[in-house]
Length: 344
Image 1 (cartoon, rainbow, N blue to C red):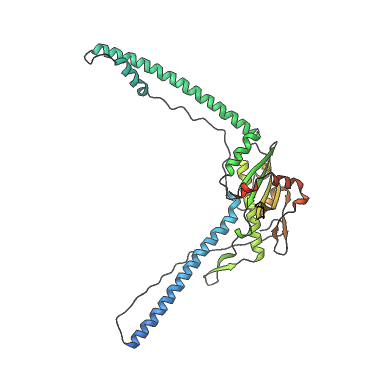
Image 2 (cartoon, rainbow, N blue to C red):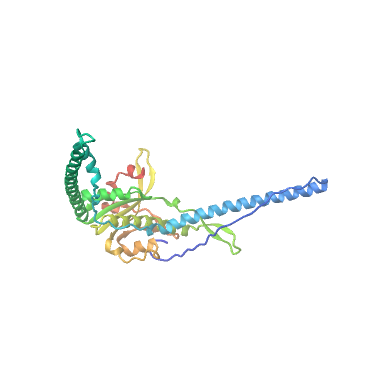
């Protein structure tokens, strides 16, 4: 599906393939019988080879089906919205933990046959232990309250879009992303993000399907279909990054986003990238999206403002943007440590 005018629909159905083969032998026979046995064995070997090839083809079809499913569902990943942090409750203390040392202290020097003295000592020890427990309980709750106050301050800073709070939170959230992403700047409630998406080779060249007879077929994708899937890949990684950013940083109202892909490493060891997609996205535009049914290209088209995305040729292949005409985007790309980003 390309981002722009026109519509493309693709569907596939890949099912399991089973196979069975058997190798056997017989009794020693005459030359005629041996020739017949040899011929039978060759047929069985050929049958086994065909079955093995079919099983390998079925495994490849399953791998390809998973790859295309990943592309189609990149943007459907969900992230729980951030909630105000709550300090853990103080565990209820037990008297025994305080009583043992107090009894040991109180009974020191009192003989085992001094029953009255030992009883009185135990009573004093219990009273002291109860006082210890009460002091511990008050102190522990005071510390918990101070910790909760610190958490509240951090939450207010996050919701208030303090750059020193928001940017590290976003960076930590993006650390495990398949497509590396970095928050570059925060201007008011609008964040600037840079995403590094894979190249067009991320899209497999063949698509799993079945013939009318029900046999597995690994159909080679047309140039147009492969370009459509690559457009979905770029849009999918952009959207999943935006969804995560809006989830973990509740104060953000919008994001300016640039999607890059690695081009090459030049003779000086510097990473060269292409800017493939850019746009501004409001949080409120994401409200009510039918994520289960809308594809990534449709969502990007319908939610972006100032969308920049080039598609060229009859196949509508995604084509790099010319940043010479976009100095603000070029400055955003220049602000990123591309070596560090590509090393993730």
